[in-house]
Amino acid sequence: APGTVIIGAGHAGVECAFALRTAGYTLPITLLGAEACEPYQRPPLSKGFLSGAMAAERLALRSPQVYEKHGIQVHAGDPAAQLDCASSVVTTASGRRIGFQHCVIATGAHARTLPVLHGPDVYVLRNLADARALQARLADACRLLVVGGGYLGLEAAATAAKLGAQVVVLESSPALMSGKVSAHASTEFDAMHGQAGICLRRNATRVDWAARPGGGWTALLPDGTSYDADAVLVSIGAEPDTGLAESAGIACDGGILVDAQFRSSAPAVFAIGDCARAYRHELGARARVESVQNALDSARAAAAAIAMQAPPAGRPPTFWSEQHGRRLQIAGIVNPAIAVQDVVTRSANGWLVERYQQGLLAAVEALDSPVEFIKSMKRIGSPPQP
Ligand code: FAD
Image (cartoon, rainbow, N blue to C red; front, side):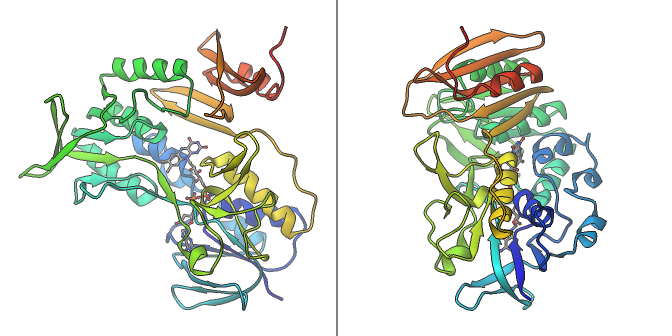
């Protein structure tokens, strides 16, 4: 009997396969991966793996034997090339034809690029091959320009500085991790990067790029300062991989549009993780959420729907980042259209920011304060404590 075919073997796809088995699903499960390697964790690529502290073997999401043990057929390096919803068949690049009762799209996202920056000295950081290439480059002390002061760019900047690179970060907005964290968190991380010798240029909205004759690039800012670099890392966000879904006639708009159970406009097809755009009650709108926790939770919700089980209980979205050996944890989502009151408290090793909107706790940020974080996170949706 046809079972479920999962397209994409990242955090979401792999979790969905195992969640189906946990939910008692007995039909065949096929997991298709575009990358030829074993399914792996992405967060270390800008952190421990990039720095060399974490070996490649430790990146695996699951040990190779457990796929077989749970009857999950993995085809790594054989991406889905076509999805035919009318006949319920997925065709892979190598020509495999897999019939399905349910299909789960978990294709993730790819790094956004800048057309002006191209060639061997320009890097992005999304997959293992990207991380290996950047790591090799950082092995010789080099001058690195990072375009984009978001989580990913800043984690890579911190790691590169630790490895001895001279690092300059160009951020177009006035603050780091703009729109993602409180002013307090942004300012604190700004200071940490400065102390580590990283040069931060905020408000870098206009940058002129010139390829250097011997390799590398020069960035020229409107105030006349220029930065020479051997390598440039472009980290300006990711775009969802919706091509396969769009060709199949599935509704997409900045992500594959899904309902609360992660069902797409095609009744037997689900979409989960970074590629999906579901309704977020915190925002009163649909949004894509790029985090491991969202990948796992959406995978479990889709698996429950396929296995005809009750949906898992919802929990607030969470996220983490590591920069200069400090750990930032975030829970909840702040609606940018509504005023926010931040309450900052110090803890033994860091701080906690509780972010209130319309009198209720909307989000929490904690630096090196895991206990306080958990306690506060449980209060999301509640008014301040007296
Ligand atoms: P992915 O993990 O991107 O997996 C999608 C997979 O589908 C990919 O392997 C892709 O090759 C494959 N694919 C695409 N098209 C096809 C096809 N046609 N056929 C078959 N396979 C296909 N999140 C956090 O919460 N905390 C962090 O600290 C953090 N750090 C990060 C650091 C880096 C460097 C990066 C890149 C991301 C980080 N994230 C972090 C985000 C997190 O990794 C993503 O949100 C998560 O990986 C999303 O899972 P996913 O399965 O939806 O997508």
